[in-house]
Length: 435
Image (cartoon, rainbow, N blue to C red; front, side, top):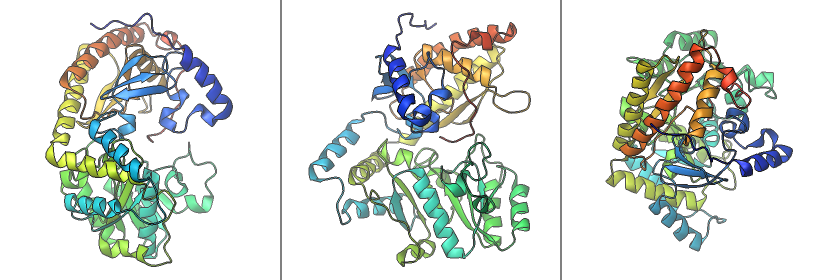
């Protein structure tokens, strides 16, 4: 059984965190990376480097990276073909006052891989893509309301339905966005009933923390089209992970528009949205605006081309399923062996460690203890795990050994009702799903 590193040092992390909190609100640029989402004084504040499926913090402590940069790393940190593509493109330049020829090459390659992506536009992050898709849907339908399920970025229209995150969003915007429940087609039907003829788009992640129930995605599509709305799949997490064509290919349900990012460029900033040419053509005029300086950032595009080429020649997704399903199986066995109130949800390429209280909310104390102990044992996770191509079976086996030691500790803490007493830092702050 794995042993905790007694000599583990976090001195640089401590100093850096103190500096960060004086000048960076909440201490990080992304919610999932914020210090209050981990255990202060135990979890590292900052990562200094990564290689394959491992990362090292600023104090030199090594971790098996289960989060894979929130899913952006699909092949591995410093993957050779990625580094080569970046270096090659930088010799020629990164951004010009006219398009680069690589833009066309990438678009053609995506269309070949995902045929319903007839026309597309690029962005830098997921919020660019989802917000662009919503604007296109509104322009195409002439409607304003949006039915959404889950998290689709930080922008006003998306975060409007989250009471924990929507302060600063005008009420007039909140009134146009309506949340429906995953696997509950009735909740979507009610939105169409309450806002008949006004809904421009239905947007959802094809996979939530659970798989779609039989015909759920087809029913969403049928209902959207019946009511004249555009169906948008947010495939920022599932794209190029479940299958080369994402969830649309895996579940054999084609949306009108889809949004991709993260895995497409192995950590370089790039997102894509597109779909039916008739719908995307609203961007061909001058009255529907989607434009910003760094759209078309060439190093990212060069990397994406090489990533997709690699996926065509190597069964990347098969390996993601293999290691992810092994992680799920190992975690399930631990939950059966030890009396710890946790379970693993999700699917192979995206296993999720869930800690719930009696009301179905996050058991923050238990999750905090878990994150504390994983950090101490060299596992980097935020409980939403995304394996990458560099993870081998031996890495998952090693994770499992370390997790068993953690389960022993947590079982005892639960039995003695001393979960909070075991914490060596403040409990993590609650948050909704966003990555």
